[in-house]
Image 1 (cartoon, rainbow, N blue to C red):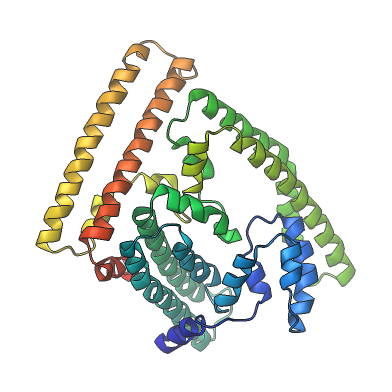
Image 2 (cartoon, rainbow, N blue to C red):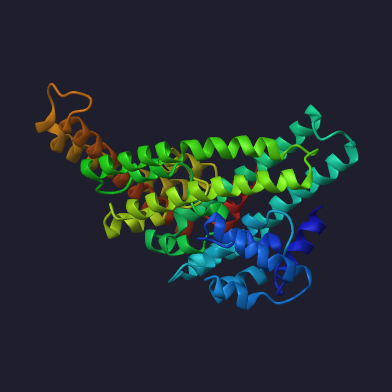
Length: 384
């Protein structure tokens, strides 16, 4: 298993051919654009023909094509491709490069080894696909792989600055294009006003209302398409209806996204783009102290981490005091939907956004200046 993982990773050092699976990583394509591109490119790829000009004509940057060629095909393609993007962040320091240079090969190898172990074990069991034991093993291994992935991106959240993370946004592959619970991340943006929050909520309600029928149709047709006994002409007709519903829902989402970005200031857009994959809003809000202490710090390191924690505590008290003073004049008999209540809620959200910045600043010092890369790696790959 370990040999398979290392062989796969070693092969990524040299250019690898483009594959249909790799084309699925291309970001910022809507479903109809992706379908059209795949319809043209896949037959050419199967004939071992170059599709570079076709991709460029579709708006794919040559640097992105190069990255697709550099990553080895195989399992966990999204994860392995995305990990390497951290080296594309601007103005990386020597400490940041050293950290990620240590983490990436071992994180990739650990995940691929888990995948290979699961694949081999399930093959040896010779059980039907719907067997509960088979599903239990697959789910358990998938959860381990996902946990490693989330811990890796938490370290990225800590190690890179807001500007560096924001610069990576446009490079993330399609499956990582949006963080979990985007609306929740929006409500944690620094300086979000009640007016902005109201406009965001209205847009989200509009999106749900206008796309509800299409989403229901997509689900219904998806169930029908899983019928293996469909005749070719029946499948083609259902697929066409499914694609049309997807396109309508996509057009609605595209319009809402375009309108939504106009609501925010440039600084808020920067912070929104800085959201890393995998981490939900509640995970971003978590104090870094417990995670850092799980990285087996030495007594000297633990003392330094305590100093950083004390700094967070002091900043927390300052933010809480500032927030109390701001809401003091708004307290009293206010209804749940009153402007005063909304303003108070936004002040509390703003305080939390400031806390997250304080958390990240302290954690950045911890992972780049206090802890060793091998300690951080051990925390990422060790099951918990």
